[in-house]
Image (cartoon, rainbow, N blue to C red; front, side, top):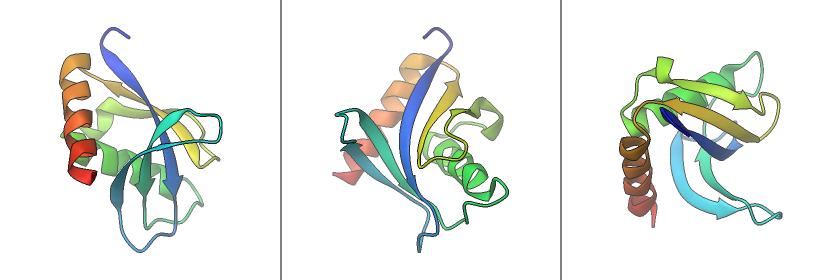
Length: 99
């Protein structure tokens, strides 16, 4: 995708901490980035926490991270605006740190 990246996530709300936990595969075989957030899944709180955590982890502005799909689901897709190569490199770095 020119000018950004779509990122699939699996989110666990109501966790004890906000954290990126690496890559996992869904039952369908789809790879996703696994996240935990402390926020409750009510009134968009967990979605806002996910956006903030991803933006902080990838050193992006929150305005460059938006929810594409999955607002009421644990499996979400975010749109990350910016240089796709830089975003991909940052994703590789944070997933390496988790293994």
